[in-house]
Length: 481
Image (tube, rainbow, N blue to C red; front, side, top):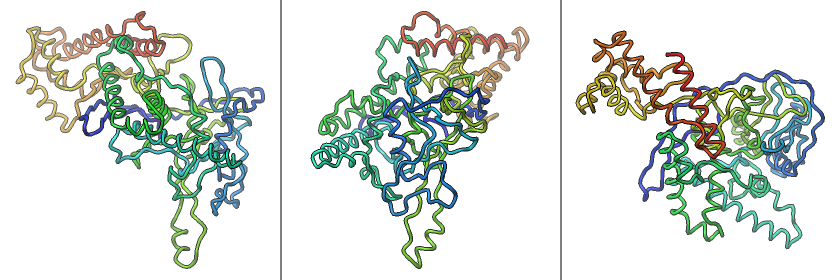
């Protein structure tokens, strides 16, 4: 399971459809960082560590024996588990993260959050998934504040930290206040970019993605602006909530849902070249036995499924940060949703670990460009372009010719086939024949794209990192040609 990193920017029905997709993801790396020397003792440095107790409520904790119930079967709040991780301030420029407060064994469960306390998207929502989640989060915040006010008046302050537990509990029955209070006050993503910052991106494909995302979320806001006003919320609240979910959600393929997991959402992405020290996953409840008992007697409620954060194969030393992998994505995905671009350490001008460069948005653009470049005789005719695409379809039936790219490992096979088709028909007089022409076309296009990533014109550090990673990939590919 990876952090959310691809999306269809789908507006509400009355605003039409804006569909923009990111580059195809690479497989996430799963290797783990070796043990480091023991660090100094670490104590929780922020009161937000209490959100971990709230999130894991009902879990007996890492020291529970196999015979102990891991969930309060009568749904009464259990005492907080004795956790071995805490929220910590990581220092200037790094924000917060999870830190091990004791040595953690390989495979040890660090956090276990019932799915009743996981804020999940609705696959059937009319709005874009993040906009729908944002609206529901603001409803939950409004309700939590009302509960807190009522509890304060009645002397029942504990009500603000309670939740209805059990497999049937819905989000409207849970007071999400403790988690909401622990969320960052601001997350900046390209949703906030102005026209000049969009221009600084340089890459027309990325600019299209950003503008599409901004238009989609703007249209979603217009669709729910009336309800937001009733909650005392405006654009800034909505934008905050959307960016919270863009930067903190996991995507579960089996259900098609985006999941924001309190507590686990505090874990940062492992900075390159380090590998993540922990992993995540959903632990499904077993209900067959419960169903069988239900036929003859009233059973205790079944244990809910849980979302777990688990130490990796190398374990984690006391004082080390607990990190996960947000996925092996190109820099577009990190910038668009997470608001940062991971780069290799050491100050070297190297591309990100899973970097990719889109050379053409689709097959038609690629065919038209390649024919013109190969022939040097002006724009290609529609019939010529159609002929190239037909040849590609015949050789690779059903291929989706979107986001044709290069990586540090070579040229996208779909793009290579298309260029070979063009070169085969036009390479008789070229140096090196058809193969030489195909190679020359790749080089020419990479050089063209590299000019989109000139350095020195970016005032935003994240945009500068994005362009640096792309430029470094261009240089690497050119050195291979």
